[in-house]
Image (cartoon, rainbow, N blue to C red; front, top):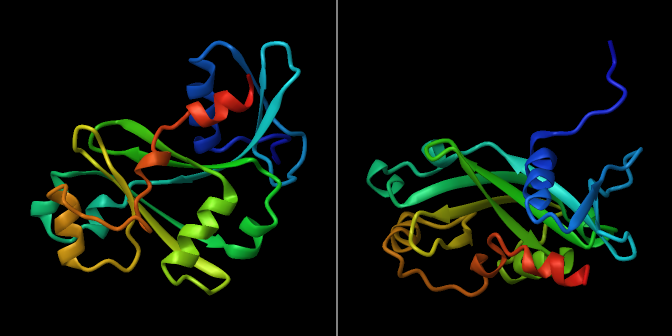
Amino acid sequence: MKPIFTIHAGEYLVATEIEKFRNYNVWLPGKDTGIDLLITNNTNTKATSLQVKYSKDFSTTYIKNKIFRQDIKSVGWWTLNKAKIEKSKANFWIFVLYSLKEKTQDFIIIKPLELLKIFNNTNRTANLIHCYITVTNHDPANAYETRGLNDKDIQQICKNCYKDKNRDLTVYLDNWKQITEKLM
């Protein structure tokens, strides 16, 4: 049996999170256009579009040194097509990181051009980009693009003293405000 319509786990988690705000409507597209979800205000007069990427938690395989794992909430891994990011029609890309340990999720909410800037600033020039996003357990939590970092860098992230503005995604972590502002 072939399903007529499917929604993946990340899209479901994003839609559920947006519905908590109660002032917005979540719409699902009828075909694949590169837009996973459309969000409108209550009067359906303003809209924004989302591309959603979901990853299982790779913290136990990516963070090899167990002593560091206590400071890491989750690690997501994606293989992204740079050309698709460049041509994306979505206003925002949302990366969903689910923490197996805490049974919670975090969201990196970023505009496609800002995502490309991060990859360009970290010398990611190939069309296929492997991306690791790591979220910490710190209070407040931090998020970083960690692909290619060495153990010393991961240790600094765990100690909450890592500094690299080109890899820091904390401003995008659970930043629903940038979506809701677009709908006002």
